[in-house]
Image 1 (cartoon, helix red, strand yellow):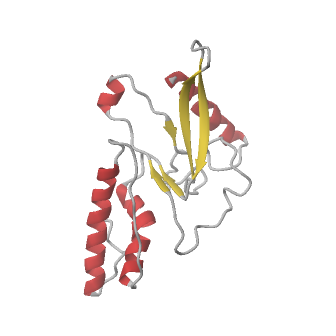
Image 2 (image 1 turned 90 degrees about the horizontal axis):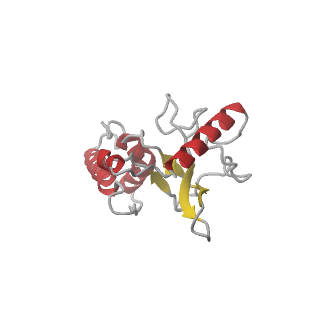
Length: 184
């Protein structure tokens, strides 16, 4: 399965560099995926953060079955061409009904923003939590939910978001800028 997933990634990388429009995944997005507007104020946004495989997972022979478009040099969360990634591809390794032949089903999902494994917690905060902190200081209400499988990185991400948000809130209440310098 790992080899099939890598072949898919290599093929899509070549195709996307050559002529595929979109966000660099090589998966054809729906017609409006790249140009769709952001969620309206008060709307629900879905953010996905991928974590890298741990060394002990690789040692057990586990392999990466999630692809987020490669990060551009200018921005760790941007797809080739500088646009933030809005697609996550899941490589579902399956067996055919005869239980003899294997295949990999590649499914692309559209999200508000996808963060690759090279993206840092500061970038996640600036995108996902900082607007809610600013809203809270302006008297509005927001909620941030973390959802995922055990070991998927929720606690690692949330610890940084909580710490940075609290610092920004206290700075904002004290009268200084709530957003600038919060992620340092």
